[in-house]
Image (tube, rainbow, N blue to C red; front, side, top):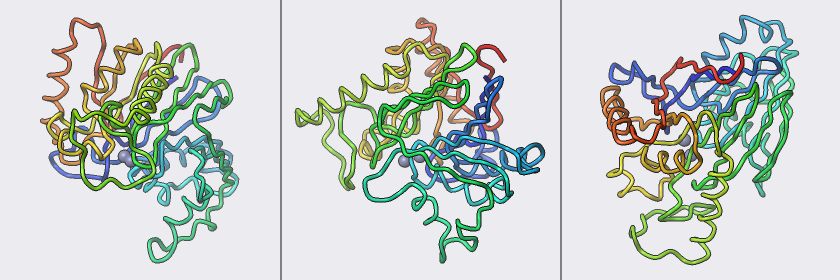
Length: 308
Ligand SMILES: [Zn+2]
Ligand SMILES: [Zn+2]
């Protein structure tokens, strides 16, 4: 399968001279199996440019089929969707997957961001056919030849990690998540950070342990692990309740799961190209003896895994 990165940034798009090389668009990753339908993970602003390319082929003629996996519906993971041209072409078929909420159907979550006064084009004017598939944690399903698994992450209002197995290769997409050590993030707004190092409520510690085990199991032996590495260790210490990790947390999971390549992803909006180069150089030198390969995602990075 082929994997292409269209948006690698977290939180908000950051175009500009200091982010040109890695790119300023928010999260969007394309996965193309050797055969079978196209898969897109997350619909941040990177999806706009991908949509333009898709319109040059089947989707421009209204006979495209695409499966869209959403990690969670925070803005930086869905805000490109209203500008995704294939949605406005009749005949195209989209399957949209995200975690089931107790209170709102997935379709309403997407529709609400296109409502007046936020956007002029209502969601019900989308011409493509949309089918929504609400997922429960730990769901396993197939998209043509691709086997898909998921597990929950430690993030405010919860995000899902996905594993895709196809063409003799495997990749895991794991963003957004805090490490599983200091705070349990679920369905409440936490305004003040916890005291790091303070003992956790036993019930929270147990939930975090199970969450970490679930992610390591999902990532076991993967060829590629794409991971939320938004924070430096210093930033994490002041914002552990924001739900993001450092490259060192990602390395911990990658080594525990024996993955081959770790991809640093969901870069902080304020991180410049030069700073990202430095982060990458440092973590590579620290892990040289482990055999773990580490790359930092940039827009248009293309990786081939397994048979293509
Ligand atoms: Zn995010
Ligand atoms: Zn988020």
